[in-house]
Length: 139
Figure 1 (cartoon, rainbow, N blue to C red):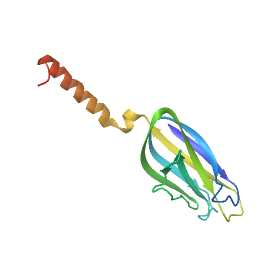
Figure 2 (figure 1 turned 90 degrees about the vertical axis):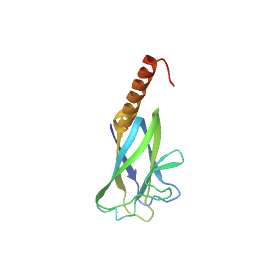
Figure 3 (figure 1 turned 30 degrees about the vertical axis):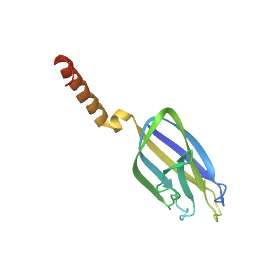
Figure 4 (figure 1 turned 60 degrees about the vertical axis):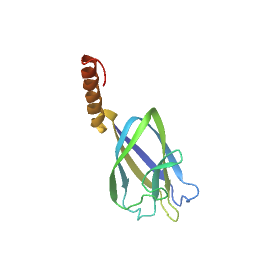
């Protein structure tokens, strides 16, 4: 499932009071994130994604993503375990004279597709349990 968030960052949004957009993401695994910076941003708009106080993207904590006339794409692996979990995307633009629209695209796959080895390990365990049952129990 692809989630799209358009973050409107007003001119001169201070570091201490960033704008934010919240998004609820359904259970699955975030496998990739794209952030589009339109022409003219010149690296002056910064953005980051959080879940509560935990910084999901970019990493390491304390860094902010920026760019100019580019789409930055990253493969990630972040499991959303709840039925629906809330994430917050922040943006700030100290020193800018114009507003900017930053577009986030967040790709989420079902757990069994993003982590296919889980299905395989369950199959192996089921076969092992079946063989153990036929042979009279585990030894």
